[in-house]
Length: 155
Image (cartoon, rainbow, N blue to C red; front, top):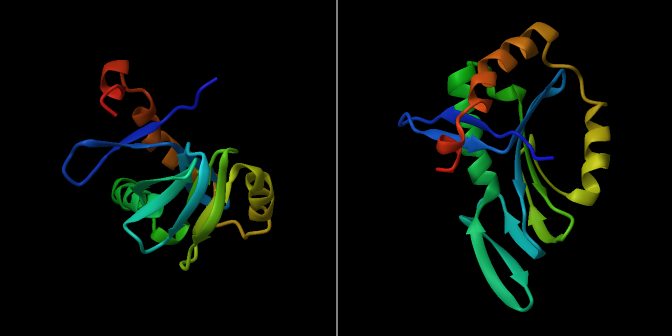
């Protein structure tokens, strides 16, 4: 079973791919899922992060910055204040988050094994969206989940 990505327009009118968006009373969770193995090093401000796998270093674009861009584009499309968004970067079970740090509130980086605990903690947060807002946002995003395979293959 696969996940359904959401495609939304960016500033230039092209489409960007968002891995997952979770809508609930606690907020709009914009999820960037990373499929890396090995040790992961990175922080909020660096341009690139590092994966060390079998003694070799591999660099990849900072997923916090990537998700920040996704949220900016969502804000423009949805007209919902930035205080409603949660940036969640997830790594699969093969990744070991050795030294990963965030400074800003509303930004989280978690490994697969910590995801359940993270989500459980979110239930303690106050509600910031009502059901009507969630339904409205959902209806705005729904068309972006129904793109043709030809368009999706470009991403």
